[in-house]
Image (cartoon, rainbow, N blue to C red; front, side, top):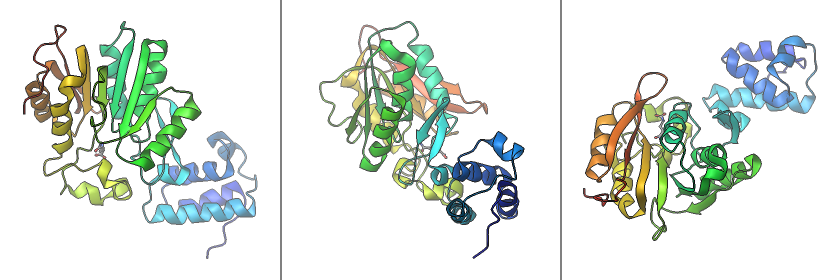
Length: 288
Ligand code: GLN
């Protein structure tokens, strides 16, 4: 077992010989409970022995590829800190596009009934609840995974968001409920996609990532069952893979939605597709 040096500077130097420098700083700040500025400004500050041992173990786990978000137990999303861990998808920056597009589409509207399908750590439901504030009449969030919901409930409590979390399979269990805004970041990676065996994805729950041979099974399932749950004028926004925009737009259109389109993420990739139930409420009933 390597003897970890006990000053911040030495610990950082030791870790950087083994893992990426940015990762090393993130892990060290986490263990030493200090800011990046402290790390740079006070490299002579000492780690305690337990901190040094914890740091050593985290560097070892990083070496075998475990995601940084799981090692530090958190990831930022829309400028808020969300608790995450093994068993729940790690928030991605591209999902912020979905939040922005959703907020843009309901600008000026009040008494919004919001639904987040496959909420995971709760990022979409909680962010929308907090950003909409009093304009949200209710926010319901569903996930099939009790483990994921544990994180979501914790995050909502820590961030002071009022969200009604429910364990369930997409829209099953929501009979009789109608919504004005439905968002989802469902699993959408194709079952055989080699990315599932690379990087962070290896450590994330496959149930949150993979969805059939083309990755579209869950998006189809959601679109098929949305009809009775959409109030007149309701918006639906779904995140999807880089090459799925045309397919998802077709799925939304065949579910009877109007104003169907897609929005790009910061990398210029069509990442979110959306559609709207007509104001007069016609033809929103799903057909396959
Ligand atoms: N964006 C993720 C990835 O490809 C997938 C997330 C998802 O399936 N919802 O890494």
